[in-house]
Image 1 (cartoon, rainbow, N blue to C red):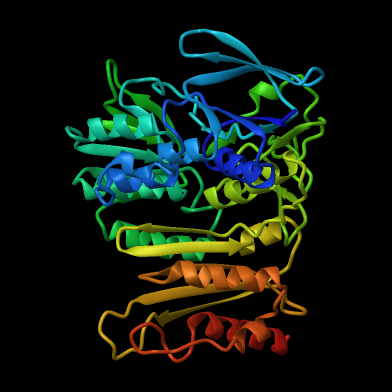
Image 2: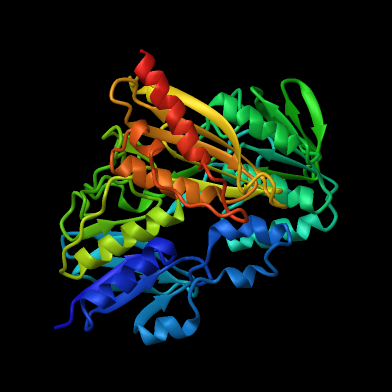
Length: 449
C-alpha cells in the first residue's frame, strides 16, 4: 500500500514539504489541505504589489497549476481541517460546501502557519482596519487605497515599514506608530533604528515611537486613531503588530508547545506525537548562537523546515539546522538587513558584547551610482566571535547579510572576518569591503581590552 501523507497548510512550508515527500517516495499519496482559495503564493510580495512595483497579486503565485498535477498532489483549497485523531491517524476535513471527510494518514505534517495579531482595542473591527497577511487582505487594502488620503500603520517591523512604503508610493499621507522607543526592535539596536527612521522620514512618512495607539476612532468606518491622547486622522489603518503561531487545531492532542507558544519539534521536525511533523510559522526554532528557543517566521525558514519535514514524513532522513535569523527588506530607495543578535538581544540573555559601526560605499568612490552603506558588527568581547550584524544601504545589503550569516555559522572571529579575501571592481565594490572594515575595528577594540 502506498504511504498516505496529509499536509495541513499549502503555502511555503506545506508545498515544499509535499515536494520533498514526492522526491523521497515516488508512490506516496499526498493530500494538501488549505482553507484559502488560492494555491501557494508569496505573502512577502503583497506590499510591493500595493506599491506598484509588482504588477498584480496574481504574479505572487509560487507554482503553476501544472506543478500540482505533475507532482500528483491532491490539492484541496477552501477546505479546513476540523480535528485530528492521532490514535487512529485520521484528519476530519470540511470543504466549502460543508461536506465532511475523514482522511487517513501514515504521516501528518502541520504547516498551519500563523495569523496576524489584531490588537483588541476599541475600533479594531471597524471597516478600513486591515491586517497585511493574505491575498484577500491585499485586495481589500488595494481597493481602499483608491480613495484614501491618510493612513496609519501600527507596528514598525518589516511588514509595517513595507506597508508604509506602499501607502507613500500611492501619495497617501502615512504615519507609523510603534509602542517601543525605536523602530525595528526585533532586529536593530537603537542607533541603527534611529538612522533608519530618519531615512524613512525623508520620504514624507511620520514616525511616532514610544507611544501606544489607544483606540481606533470612527462610527461607520475608520476616521482616525488616538495616540497618547492625540487624535490623528486616517482613512485606513493597517495592524502590523506581528503574527502568532496558529496552533488551535492541536489543542488537547498532546502536541507539546515551546516557551514561544509555537510547536516544539526535534531536528527532524517531529512533534511530541508519533506520526505528526510540523514546519513553518507555527513551529519554534532554536538559535544557533544562544541555543535558546526562538521564533523565526520567514519564508526561507519555512521552506527549509518544510523540506526537512517532508523527507522524514516520507521515510527518509534529514535534520534541520539551528537558525541564525537572517532577514532583509527594501523600502523606498534603500535596503536593510540583520542577522544574529543585536546588542540589546545579547544583553537580554546575558551575553557581553563589543560593536563597531562604519559607513562605506557600495562602489569605488569615483564610480557613478555608488551608494552609502552603514554596517554594524556585534561580537563577543574575549575571543571576538561574531554574534550579529545590522546593515542599511542603497544596494547589495542582502549579499553582505548572507556573508555574515556564513561567518556566524562558522563561528568566525572579528579578526578572521577582517582578513576575508573579498573582491573588488569599481562598478560593484570598493577595494576594502565595509564589512571587513567594521570587523577590523571590533578586532582592535578587543586587542585593547
